[in-house]
Length: 549
Image (cartoon, rainbow, N blue to C red):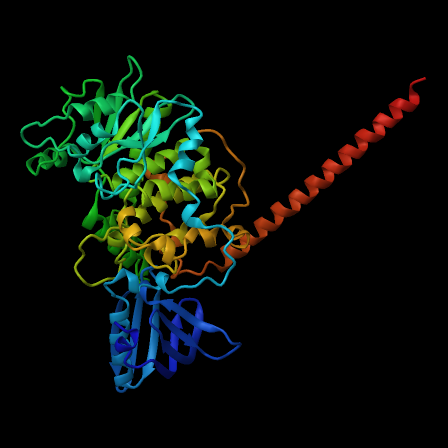
């Protein structure tokens, strides 16, 4: 298919652009295969350069021969284009609708994008499983890398290489895979060096109504326990939902077969409930006519902050089991690709200082989201404005980023990255020139040959010039476990995401700049103090030598 077939009117003059925080501007609108561009030809700058994949929905209005297209973006921005001529307006609208809903992944922009920067680091090879394994293999000899899934035959949503107990061979893993939802047998998610406890994750066990069991599964899970120790299974479904799953062939671990494990249910919502929550929240944030009562009731009705609290509570429980109880844990819901990953990754941010650095957080996303099989292509296909019926869309990753922001806000000096880093990741998960978030799992990315045909997001982010935008000036390495508060009063709305197109951040940005300047000036003064102290010490030493006979 040629993009030209979808572009009925490639260019229209005298189009007026309205967007948040900028005066209206008149210019020429151009449509390409992947971008909507508006240029006023002033100062040779483009006023708008929008990826079609960032468009969630469009509305059309007509007054006489003047047409208006309202573009609602996946990053929650709303843009208005006033187009002279009804035919041009209808053509542009139908082209945008077609180009923003392309079915084929290989027609998306990452396959056509060519970087304008020098590629210093190939992000596709920055966080390989072997490198991650080396970080804790020096502290324990109880785990090994398994290549049992190298052709994706055992589990289509797992990567080719996984970490498993050394005492369990690959044949046993194949048997366990047939007992777990989607073949997702228990694998290592995190090793706590302080006490040797671990977080594992998996899909639900397929016990069904007959109480089916798998000796290899029991052996694998018990292999992680120390003598005389108990472990915890955190199920991210309510007990009721877990029991209902048995009727469909799923279920949960029977206590009789896992006597050393205690099961705890921590219900976290999924799918359409989360998507509806996001739609309600964004609608509430965009309505500027609210009085206080109406705003608060709409915010509450969205349940967004309740979901944040549920996820953070489960993550804190997981971290508590590891650090305070000295117990290993297994986490799963149904598939083990959504709420499970929210909990495992947030627990690591609480427990592991490396996860609070820029590269450590990138490694976490690579390991616990991309390689672990979170279906980004399905979950991020639509955002808060789309009118079509949802299938698999859900803001699972955005909720995770919001939870990270909540912890960052409570511990502003413990993170090497700033809020802009989290916002950037949200934007690229939904629409990007990079191939990192394309596909639903490693198997799909392999078939698409993303490493050969697209650029990794990390190649761009990790350039020194870009990193400076995402670095937190308040950062001071903190090697302690950090315990966030999950009290409702401690969990505010993330304005940087949800209100950034409704309220100018000009004064906040100016205050941030001033803070950075003060910190830099303080460093300069500290360096001068250190030099003067050294000089003083040298002078005192010389005086002492002169006084001695």
